[in-house]
Length: 209
Image 1: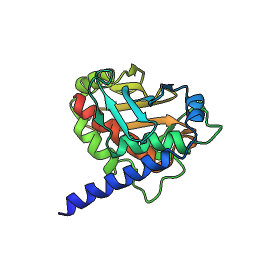
Image 2 (image 1 turned 90 degrees about the vertical axis):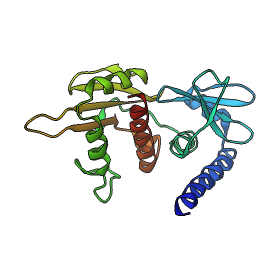
Image 3 (image 1 turned 30 degrees about the horizontal axis):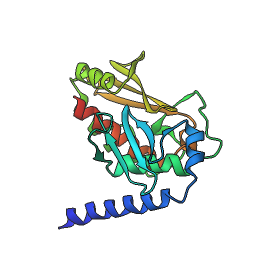
């Protein structure tokens, strides 16, 4: 019963944000981010998956086959897209300088300490699976980069890149995961939303592996 209530609350929040989305200037979103659009939908790619937002209901869905079939976006997907489109700063732009997500100024409570839950669980899952992780990154459109046993630049959105680096465990050191984002990422989304997005990325990589 408790789990059912939690899921219901997530769906409630997602639906509330769909309604809030309709209060914002969609033409401004199109210009700001160079979105594809038609009379019915706005289109946006999120980690190499195609999404669309219904311009009348605000609901977000995704498709792997050019919307011959589609699935409703989950909470993390929808809330990340809403936050970027509705709440990003008017003058948001890339710094073209990488920042470790651990060091973003809004981190509170030590939740992203190296070896903390967010990194430890993901790094543990990828241990001994560098080839599979590399393949998964490539499936998500990643471009290979230097440093790490696996290192790829990925497009969170077409206008917002990030880098994943992973060092596998050896006899001296445990595995280590590093996520780098543009230094100005918090001009595009709230810190909590960045965590939604990165959590979604890690889930996508697990699925592809």
